[in-house]
Every structure is written in structure tokens, then in C-alpha cells.
Amino acid sequence: MSCTKSGNGCTNGNGVDNNNEDDAVEISTETRYLDGTVRLRNPNIELMDQDILYHLALGSESHDLVEMFGDVKFVCMGGTPKRMFNFAEYIMKEIGHKLPTGTQLMDISQYSYRYSMYKVGPVLSISHGMGAPSIGILLHEVIKLMYHARCRDPVFFRIGTCGGIGLEGGTVIISDNAADGMMNKYYQVPVLGKLVKRPAKLDKKLVKELKALANPDDPYDTVTGTTMCADDFYEGQGRLDGAFCDYSEADKMEYLERLRSNGIRNIEMEATTFAALTHHAGIKAAIVCVALLDRMKGDQVCTPKEVLTEWQLRPQILVARYIKRYLQTKGRISLDGHGSMAVKSPRRFKLVQQESQTFE
Ligand code: R2B
Ligand code: URA
Image (tube, rainbow, N blue to C red; front, side, top):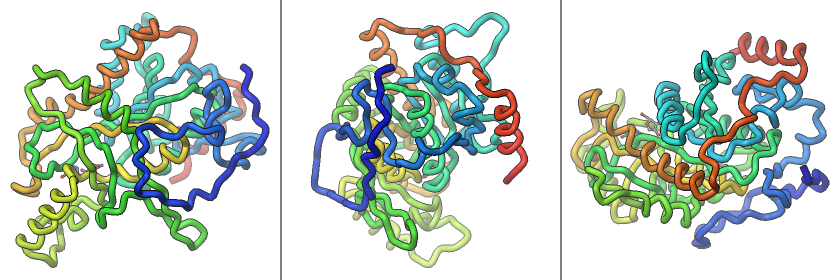
């Protein structure tokens, strides 16, 4: 592989530019080597003699990450392990990927007991849990995984659920922007006692491509719009049914109307973190969610389970169309030669598994 690893290209990432409406993520030499492999914006990693991806139960010296993950092109994330297992099975059928006889899908991160990860040819399907801290930790480790595995120009998707704003349950929303509960289009996180703000930007070209894949015959609407990311399901989303509520229904409706008039079409809990960290890493990314209810009409999720299960397939269907179309145009609907558990050092392999297993 022709990738050079000299230079660090590290930036502090403090600058925020809300007005730049570039269509695509900037893929610069800071975040890419010439061959398209991921370049980390952290000079420390290549100086370490091993990098333990603790919450994934993987390590750069215990596992042969190039052999295991080098062919990954799409990383799909969603909240729950079950949904992401189902997605792995679904995408396997869609892209015609065959498992060797006598084998089955395995949760690669099972010994972490934190996230679940399945690999189906060029697709990784990973659960991210709920909220910014959970998806943030995962993104740090998955971006490093892309680097160690020398994946080329990977594309990330979040396949999720949300509350719609003036959109009925079952509607699919492709996020073209992400904003927090104060309508700031950035993700902010305290680092060394200072608030670091990172622009929460999504790839507008990818949004258009996804929207174009919505089929007029789909028995539901697919729309684009700004997604609000809350740090809480109840008060943070203006619900009246949490354990606490110090505002009236009129206050709630006034807030939701304000969101709606600012182009916000749905509320969930990971959009700004996902958009900001992928953007900072120069990774093309998109968020596709299904609304479980219209928040203008209520707060409780009371749609029957079977209906919710069908609705949750809808973002998966759209993302699968994108992946299939990509693989068809590249003439590789299924790839061989990568993907089984490849141990580099049995001693370190055992240690990484034990460490991930033992500690909280
Ligand atoms: C959507 O659903 C979850 C809360 O129920 C949260 O992870 C999200 O973004
Ligand atoms: N997930 C959320 O975060 N909010 C909702 O209203 C529904 C799903």
C-alpha cells in the first residue's frame, strides 16, 4: 500500500463556521492520504506501540485489523444491538453476500458488552446506544478502526428513530443539517476545561443522492430537513410526560412551533455529535431516521410494536438502496478475502478480550 504516514496535520478544531453551505465534506490532506485511506488528526496514535479500541474489544496489535476490516466501505450505525443485527442480515440479502457454510454472523465486539458490531462484506453494522457520549466514544474508536484497517473513503450512516415535528409516524427524514436544543449548528464538548465547538455539518450531496432514492411508490413520505439533537428524551425534547415538568403544554407547543419555523423537522439524540465528528474526520456521512410519532400531537410512543418494527425498516431500506447502487456501479456486489477474525498476537488478543470483559 502506498500510504505515507509522515506529518501529523493536527488542528485544534475550535473554529466554527455556521454559514458555509458547502455541498460535500471537505476531504483534505489533513484527513486523507493520497490513496483515500483515513488520516487521523491525532499525532499520538501512530507513536503508540499499540492502540486498544477498548469499547470495541479490538486492538491494533492483537488483531490484524487490515485483514479483518480493510475492505469496509460503509459503516452503518443505529441505536440498538437488535436493530443492527437485523440490518446486518437484511443488507446481507440485499447485496448477495454469502457466509461460508456452517458459519453465522458474529458480534465482533461481544466481549466489550458495550456495542455490537457485525460485518457483512464491505458493510459494518454497529449499535451506538443512546445519546452524545455513547455515540461519541464509538465514533472515536470506529474512526481509528478505519485508520488502522486502512479503509478507503468510508461512508458513515446513522439509521435511527426520532420524533417528527408536524410529520406523521412512519415518515422518513434525511437530515440536511443538525442543531442542538438551542438551535446551534454545532456540537460542543468541554475539553481541558474549555468548550470546544465543532460544526455539525452533513454532506449535502449525499442528502440529495439519498432523497433521489426514495421511491414514489414507497407507501410513506421521505423528506429532508434539519434535525434537532437533544441530550434527553423528556425535558430536553419538551415532553410533558417525564418524571419532572416545569412548563405548560402551551410552552411546549410554542417551542415546537419555533423549531418548526426554523426548519427543524425531527428530534433525536445523536445528530450533532455524529455530524460533527464525522465532518471533523473528513468522513462523508448521512443521518436517516424514521419518526415514531408526530410530537405536535403527543409525547408517548404508543404505536403497536409490529408497526414500529415495520417503520424501523424504512431508513434501512433507503440506505440499502444507496449501498447496492454503489456496489453495482463499482461492479462488486460482494467481496471476498476479508472479514474473518484475524489474530496477530494470540497473547495480546487474549489480553484485549479479558480487559474489555473485566472492567466496567
Ligand atoms: C432516538 O431514539 C432514542 C431515544 O429513544 C435515541 O437514541 C434517539 O436518538
Ligand atoms: N427518539 C427520540 O429521541 N425522540 C422521539 O420522540 C422518538 C424517538
